[in-house]
Each structure stands twice: as structure tokens, then as C-alpha cells.
Length: 294
Image 1 (cartoon, one colour):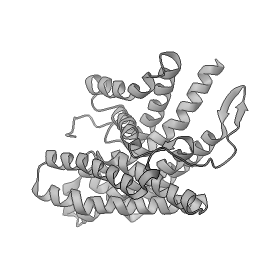
Image 2 (cartoon, rainbow, N blue to C red):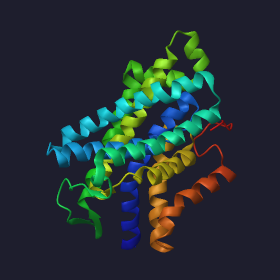
Image 3 (spheres, rainbow, N blue to C red):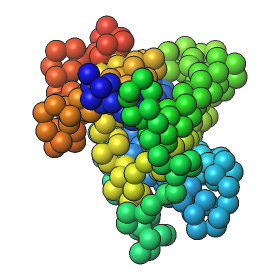
Image 4 (cartoon, one colour):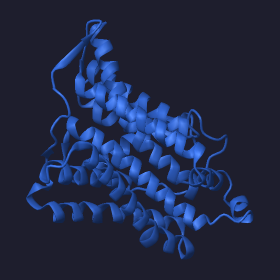
């Protein structure tokens, strides 16, 4: 029972990070009808930005966190301006998806170029003592509690952004009905720009939170994207609450699979979830009642 509780606790903490990345995927998809296959690289860049400020330059963690998120927001806007917007005006959806995949490889190369020999398997110092804590006989890493609390705080800020700000409401309106948003005078091209920026910023926030728990390397974004995409598919690609629920479920599922089946199952659990969901519940747990193009 204690072992099961430990696996679930670990799954919840990692699932919170998957939920953050999945939020960015869902936000961009709802507004643009496109899955950003370079989204994992936004996560990767956020981690490297934080490493540069916090480790290489010695700045405090919170300012490094804020600057990494801000830079990721700027990169997201650049992606919209350079790659997404020109293609959406003149090319097919398939062309856009292919360019996004190509962009992911470009960003990996840029990371290796900018950070040189430091671009592989970097360690990020823990924020607090790495000693585990015991709650009712369950051993939990103190860093995991910090990550879980911070991830929930970011989700709360994200929810308040959509509810209380004009930009958030414009993004919701465009995501719900693009044609109606244009008819009432919304600048949907500007909304797309902010959508890519916000999605990238949320991914970067997840990266900075996850960095003390793992190693940073240029290819880290791919596996995180797969797991977050599985969370988004499970919850429903059109549902923001579904992304959160899906993230926690994927985190728990992969920990249980690794703990009771085989450690190798932790890496393939997300692929299995995607296949099962697409076959039996293609709209996800909270998605719309119709299938939409990805």
C-alpha cells in the first residue's frame, strides 16, 4: 500500500508538469486548429534560458524563472510571425504541420549551437534540500512538493488570465468561434500571436519547474511533448480542464506502469494511451462531440 501511495504521489507531481505543457498545446489548437509540433522545444528552450540565468550567471531563481518565461513568450510570438501566419494565409494545413516539425529540429540545433558543449545533460541545482519527507508513511521528495505547488499556482494564474483579462477573453472568443470573432471586430491575427506566446510561456514555466528534477538536454522536448500530447488527447484537444485532468492521469498511469509492469513501460505508456483514446474515445474525456482536424 505504501508503494502504491508513493507511485501515485510521484505521478501527481510529474502529472502537474504534463498538465502545464498540455495546456499550451490545447490553447494553441483551440485558437488555430493546428497542433504545434515544436511545442516541446519551447519547453526545452525555457529550461536552457533558466539554466543560463540561474546557473551560468548566478541570478536568483525567481528572476530567472520570470525572464525564462518572458523570453519563451517572445519566441512564441516570433514563431507565429515567421512560421505560422505566412503559411496559414497561403498554404495548406499539412504544410503548416510539416513546417512546425521542421522548426522543432531547427530549435534543437540552435540550442546545441548557443550552449555549445554545455548543451548535453545539464544539471539544475535543487531549490530546497533533496532529502525526502514522510507523510503518513509515504516518502515524498521535498522538491516534488515544491514543483506540485508551483505548477498548481501557475495553473491558477493561467485560469485567472483567461477569466479576468481582455486578452484572455479575446483568446477564448476566437477559440470558440473564429468567424464570429472576426465579425465582431476582433483582430484574430493578433489573437493568434498572443496564443502562441502564452502557450510557449506556459511550457517554459513547466520546464523551469521540472529542471531541478531532471537533466536538461536539447532532445528533452520531444518526450515531454509526446506525454503532454497524450494528456491533451486524453482530456480532449478542445478542453482546457481536460488538459489538466489528462496531465495528472498520464503522470499516474506511467508511474503505475513502471512500478508494476516494467520500467521501460514508463516511456511507452503515453503512446499506448494515445492509441487507445484515438480508437475508442477520439474526442477525449471532455472534448467536443465531433472529431476535428489535427
